[in-house]
Image 1 (tube, rainbow, N blue to C red):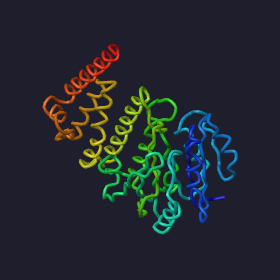
Image 2 (cartoon, rainbow, N blue to C red; image 1 turned 180 degrees about the vertical axis):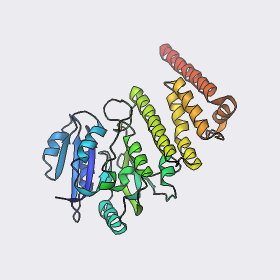
Image 3 (spheres, rainbow, N blue to C red; image 1 turned 120 degrees about the horizontal axis):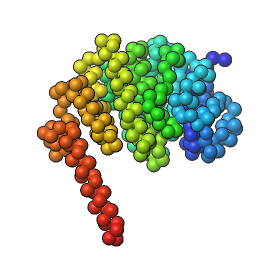
Image 4 (tube, rainbow, N blue to C red; image 1 turned 135 degrees about the horizontal axis):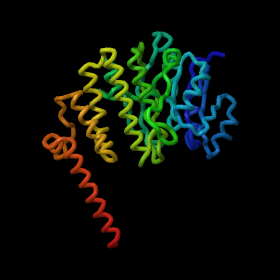
Length: 323
């Protein structure tokens, strides 16, 4: 039976949040197919899902988010599609409002804003910012809301998988960013829904798409590979405009800095590429750090920052020994 909307929710040990996410997806007026990917949870998620008769469960087998999401996509029957993290939930009426807009305007993509929460406490609203270049926006020109706030026409995105471009442990990172950039370069028919649809939760626990330590390094490199691939595709199409280059640089510059924490050689290559994209780039950091980048260059500044970090670590270690 065809559903109006399919919602795919990847989850791994998120039973503390999953019921709220699932409940927010249900509708009294729409036929909503809810697919939850249980990716080898050990917190009772499987038992809870077994008690929910309106949920299709996909066994992620521990292979991570992209593999599970792609497996779930093959089961999607909805005319429209949403991806929702188990950490988050939808505002009341989100599905109904976006579905109405999608049907009325024959949209491939219905965008909207999102509300930010810290745990369950409301923090702020990030509204959808209209743009005349959706690709530039998604590359980093302006904030682009969150893809879980969006409703996609299923047939438009059916062949856009969640990709893993760089090996990482557990759930892969930045697959949603890659997905949105692939959507953008396909030039979807875009409509907007007023207000916020998504409640995006920040919390002390690590989110599925972010990692620390070596996982964080993998996330940064994967983010870089995604941008290299997308900009290459745009260049092949003759669509890599100066505006889009500058938009990408807004993401790539801080990314080069974070990569320098673990691999300064790779970071220098990224910085060189950044200046090829935007030879007139003025490093955005304020104050003394900005002056260092502008007068001494990326490589020397990152070396100085590394020496400073090592000195601070040594000082802290000495204080701990003396106490």
